[in-house]
Image 1 (cartoon, helix red, strand yellow):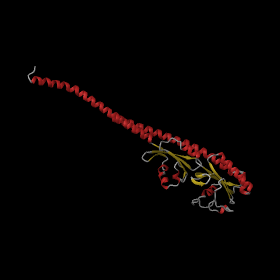
Image 2 (image 1 turned 180 degrees about the vertical axis):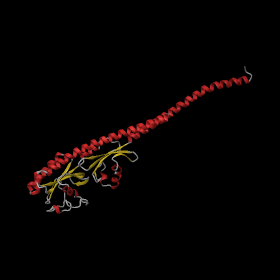
Image 3 (image 1 turned 45 degrees about the vertical axis):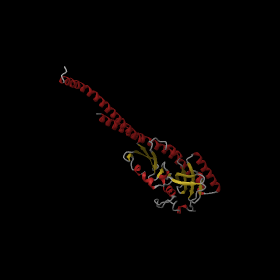
Image 4 (image 1 turned 90 degrees about the horizontal axis):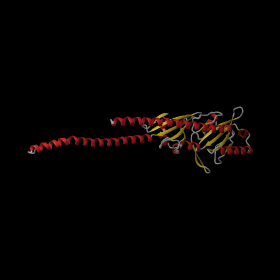
Length: 321
């Protein structure tokens, strides 16, 4: 009976904890996804305002030293408004480059539409470090996001950033250039790393091509083995992986191509299961001890009259009255 009661309690407790973990994980990831959506909207608005800025369009059409200095001041002001912004860049169709990063070097020419990395009418599947500029033009005057990439600077050191960029066009919709903002992970990292997903739990973000946008372990960005280890989490939308050792919940971030993935570890369940198991083992041993002691007393009560009777018989048999 004790085993049956223990088994039922063990199963119902496990199911209840699993359901609670699933609900909390889905709710946490949904709320986090909404936070990231709001964050991206703010950054996209900044990028769009730059792409529509008359100073940028004026410089792209008639570049001058005075216009260039005004743009640098504008970029510097934009960077001060958000601590996550690392750098701002404008590449014009005529090959002029304005950047807040003095160490940035980029191949330019008098007609950027002839450059393979800039022109919009070439194969977008080609691998090129400057491919996002081409995609920005291909997408038209819409902000686009990139996967994580590493930047190295003597002033800022090594940083992992994502970029958001947008085509700059004239009143007729013709290309004038591309503006890009490089964004660090300060806000995203601080928010995502404090989520309560268990001791071994974590969150990460991938784009539509399953390239990593954010992961708490930066080694994942450049390590094939680390990236391969993430594959089980990518294949499950809402469910368990690795023999139910972790629960995965995914959230599609609107208008971004990003997917936020939360992985909850199940050590709480395992701890409770272990506690229940040892509790019932202890209870079982205690009950067994009580039973043995009870049986011993019962047997003593039963055997004493028999022993007394045996002693009486022996006395009578030996001639005692």
